[in-house]
Length: 73
Image (tube, rainbow, N blue to C red; front, side, top):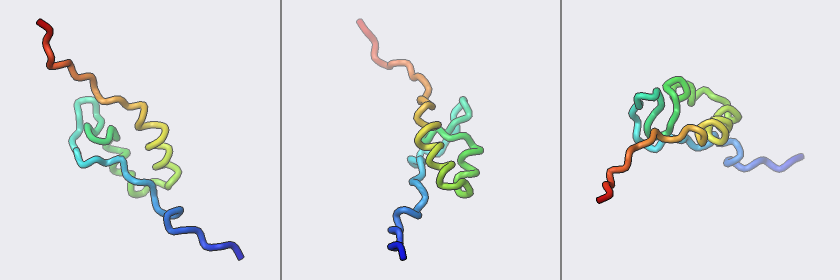
């Protein structure tokens, strides 16, 4: 008989949500950079789909460029 895996192995990955839930003009959440479709599907995604999103997809979505507010003399 194999030992029972720890509970942690069965827990879904953490959510990328950072509590800044607002959609940007680019169609991505300004907090976690997910699309509305990804946010809506998150609770029904498999662990593999969530991991793929968090490891492969979201890191490629850079926040929009913000012009510097510093001015040079």
